[in-house]
Every structure is written in structure tokens, then in C-alpha cells.
Image 1 (tube, rainbow, N blue to C red):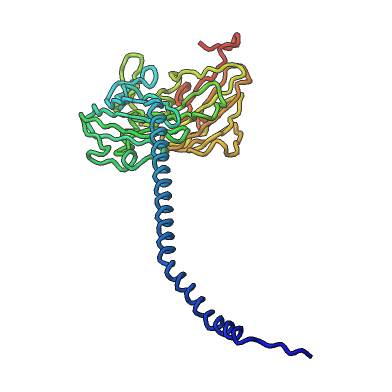
Image 2: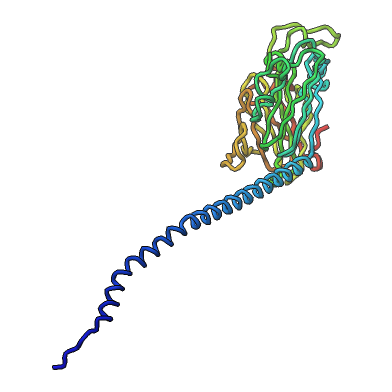
Length: 361
């Protein structure tokens, strides 16, 4: 067998390689360690660039939001600003023929003017107090800031004689509301200071063609401000009693409600009296579509008689599909008469004037 020999030079090369290998590896590690600060600096610069990009994106988003806010403000500014002037003063008011009272009025009448606005409108209501007593104003049922609807105070809604105050707000929720004093309101309301506030929807289509407001009130008859006179002009003195009113009038002075065949009619009933009023209308039934700010999407109910309690409001609708002359009145005899005398109190004629032979003169 042939023996293989290894030269000394080969053995020396292998040994040298074994000795140099750890030195080469260590040199590579030294090079990597030398590059570490550079890598850290690169990562730091990258993080800095990322932060700068994020700040730029955040700034752009803030600019976009501000632009959107400006657009929204411009849209709001373009919406109609509804300005209302209410003058509170004492004035003579005829409840019905032969009965004139000294009432507290808004713009010389009771109830005050209907305030009608659209959803989203800005509203300014300026109250000028020409009475001898302080007054205030409350938008009943509307959720408004404390500066508008909070407890009135001097310089903040409490209006002294001879002074004025402006209430400003956005009418955000559609519905039927009403306004009246918030301080000593019972006395001032009983003498005529109240009115209706209507916020109509901007985008939702109406379900009715004709819209009536019925503001129920009362006057205590028999006191010095409401003495009824006889044919000779002498006052009829007797025990006082409450006389129910609709829109400031007692029957037969209440204007009739006129409707056309096929119309959908909305009645916005607000009870500013101190009595619960069960209302019914002959020949028709009511659909209750909203009560005290309830949403119109809630299930509707149909009734031939509805009761509206003090301070409440109720939106009713009916279809004018039964031509003729009808009565809308309270079911309580003392409320639908003048101390038992008819016509009087809360009794209203509903008629279809376009139908021949059905007009009431």
C-alpha cells in the first residue's frame, strides 16, 4: 500500500489558518461595532423625518377642519336670521262682545304673535318692557343654553320697566313650543302674556296642507277687570269664575276654522290655562302625532277625544273628508259655555266654506 505524505509546508498553512480564524472574526465584529453609532444616527434621522411628516399631516387636518368649520359658519350665516320684537304693555282687549278687559299683551294683543322659524335658523327675540312691573321670557319646551333659558337675573333676562333685552339662539329641534314669562309668570300669564313658538322642519316634508294654532287660556270673570255689562251699559256683578278662551277669545268671538275637502289639517294645541281640557270635534277623529316634544316618528294614535293638561302642547292632524259645519269644543260644560250660557267659552266652529250651503255667516 502506497503511503501518503504531507509536507511540512502544508501543516504550517493549516496551523496558521486555525490561528488566524478567530482574529478575522473579531475584526469583523469590531467593524460592526464601529458601524453601530452610524446605524443609530440613521434610525434617529428616520424617526425625526416620520415625526415631521406626522406633524405636517396633523397640521393639514387641522387646516381642513378649520375650513370645514368656516364653510359651516358661512352656511349658517346664509340661513335666515329671524328677528322678533315683543312689546309688553297693558292694553284693552275684548274677550267677546260686551266684555272688554285690561290685559297684559305682547304687541297689543293676547296671545302674542306666533313666532314661526325653520330648523337651524338663528333667532333674535327682543323684549321691550313697557309695563310697570318686571318681566322675563321663557321658551317652554325648547332646550337652550342657560344664558337664554336659565333662571332670569338682573342683566341676564330679568327685564325691568322701561328696559329691553335680546334673547338669541339657534332653533335646532322642530316642533310646537310656546313662550311666556318665567318670573311671576302665573300672574302675568293669567292676564294674557303667552304666545306660540313654531319650529318647522327644514328637510322633512310636511304631512299637512293647513296649519292652525289653538292657544287655550282663561280669564277669571267677575273681577274689576272683566265685568260684563248689560244692555244699558251697567256692569253685571257676580261671583267670579274662569272663562275658557281660544286664541284670546271666548265664543262666539272665536274665528271659525275653515278647511277644504280632502285637506290634511294640523292643529297645534297649547294649553296656557290652569285646567285640563278634553277636546273633541264632531264628524272627525284626531291623529295624535306629537305630544310635548315627542318625535314624529313615534307610533301615532287616533282618538275622537284628547285631553290637554295645563302647560302641555299636542299636535293633532285630521283629514277634512266630511263636509259640513262642525264643532270643536271642550267636553266639560263649564268650559264650553259662559257660566252655563251658550255660546261661550271654548267652542269653535269648523266649516267647509267651499261646499255650497255649508257656509256659516
